[in-house]
Image (cartoon, rainbow, N blue to C red; front, side, top):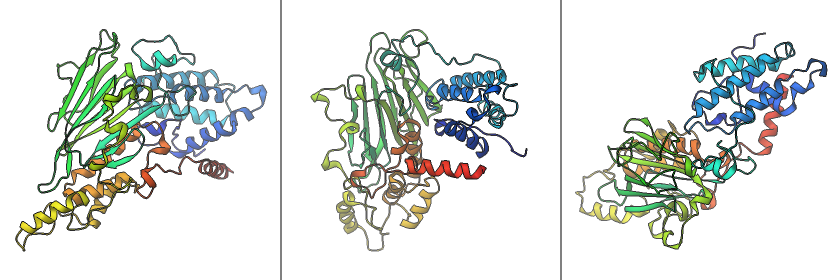
Amino acid sequence: MGMGKAGFYYPGAERLRSPPPVLTLLVLIAVSSWVHIGECQPQATQCRISKCTSDFVSLTSHLNSALDGFDTEFCKALRAYSACTHRNTKTCRGNLVYHSAVLGISDLMMQRNCSKDGPTSSTQPETAPESCNYHSRHHGSGREFRAGDPGQPTYLFCGLFGDPHLRTFKDQFQTCKVEGAWPLIDNNYLSVQVTNVPVVPGSTATATNKITIIFKPYQECTEQKVYQAVTDDLPAAFVDGTTSGGDGDTKSLRIVEKEAGQHAEIHARYIGATVIVRQVGRYLTLAVRMPEELALAYDETQDLQLCMNGCPMAERIDEDGYLPLPVLGLHHPKHQHQHQHHQQQQPHNSPQHPHGSFSLGSATAKCREKLKVKDIYFHSCVFDLLTTGDANFTSAAYSALQDLEALHPQRERWHIFPNQANGGPCSFSHTPVFKLGLLCFIIVLFL
């Protein structure tokens, strides 16, 4: 019928790092789920492709590709979906959605390297609680939750990268000096401390060169574990040489090395937390996701937490979320006084901006190579290039955005734009008007 190669879409697919499949099956499945094409078939046929699809969606929509065990669970769900379609071969013989789904399953199994033989997911998973699994312990199942699920835990996200730029648990974006050691998180379950050092001689521009993470002891799930990364030493183990915490094979706390010396992830299932640490250039970036109820478990002696309360006003560079770009030849406000003093000591033939060769135009072009949306991550990239002249800060901003997309629970809050008061989030891609317009476009496309 000239359909071409089928692809497949399901809620949560935006978390996958693989290239997006083609549009054809996305349209068919989207229309099927929204207007129930499968239910429009004559009742005598008893084609149950809509039930197969809804079961697959329920089994996979909560999965997160950033978490351990994603591929295994996704392949199990695909095999269950395939078995369901085989049971409906005769009754769905003339159903276009059925044939598209069969092709889409085959396509996804090849993309994810899934074997055709193996265990399958159950639509009624075992809900016996596991003491060292946060979700099982508090919410009755071991699965991850997505935004909008009934009874889901509320997640908080915090990230730090660049000069340094801080995204707090409240989704406020700040740029701070904070030279030396500062606590990002300090609650009853997790402590994270970063150390920032000067980047450019003659100014107070800083970036992170050391991260210390303490997972505090919790029942039988883990003893205290300390992870420490410094520039040029980003290990795949805790300081005691182990790669996991707790007894047995539960793996309630474990380190996963994604790229040797460059990218490590720590998954703490017993507290539902994930930590990502990277080295980009000479400096480190950090991203953390954890449940709100645990992040708030601290007393008044632990109130100095940058992720929770932001930077002290005396340490901030931005103005209520607005990040002013450095004037060409000058550093940003926190650097201007030092730069003017430094300039007085220079010979008259010294270059006006000795620390880097980026102009506003070239910095903008460099950041646009990786950051397509002109949100605060893009502006932070331009800001850092003009401030330091170090092109590695482009990759740092891009990596920070990748980690945000992997861990932040609310897609509509990913992008923060600098013209908003207090750095509040803004997005239009998931508004009801946009969804209605997309549905109308899909229907017109197939008329």
